[in-house]
Length: 103
Image (cartoon, rainbow, N blue to C red; front, side):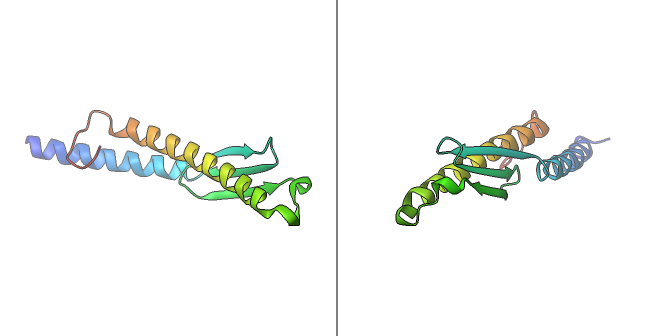
């Protein structure tokens, strides 16, 4: 088999692996909290949010800015964890396969 044929076969195999990993990551979740647990966010490793829980004790109509800050902090933390896992898992699939624009 020619080297181009081997390369194409390897690329197709890697594409299948990456698709499988992406499907698994779409189901995998991470959890982050802020404000000592006042706000909890669960995100999927595909970058989507699953849930947001707010402890009723931190809900203060006079201070919505604090609540907004807590929500943003927890959401950003969960999404960063999700991105890290996503990049790590896809990096495992593409290790040793160096094509321009793929890493």
